Length: 126
Image (cartoon, rainbow, N blue to C red; front, side, top):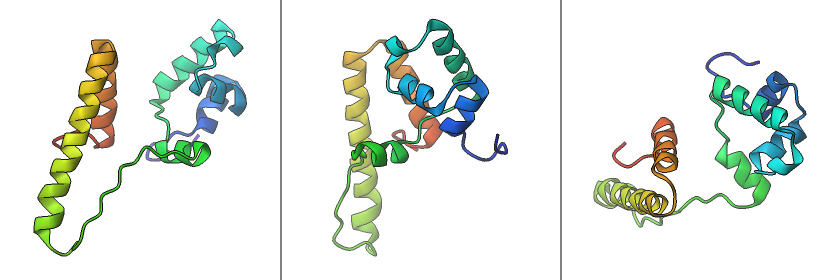
């Protein structure tokens, strides 16, 4: 396992859970029917213990989808066109995402998602 400062990887979780990387990948992909209840529980326990969070950039490379939103800015040296408008766009997009989640998911799922965004520094107001 890596030092405390390093991010936990799928290899770290799989090794600690005593499963293969492929088995852990099935868990991450939501293919629970392919895993025994005991294996699912062990993986979940290790994820919680190690505070594992999937790397969305790595996931995007694998799936050819990043879910990133780009913005074109005419003059990056002008604070008027970069600081406030960019912040406001990002904040608005995040608020729309969270609103959509709140409409379609349970309050606990929405709070869990918000917590993950805050942990990554991606939430509105950060």
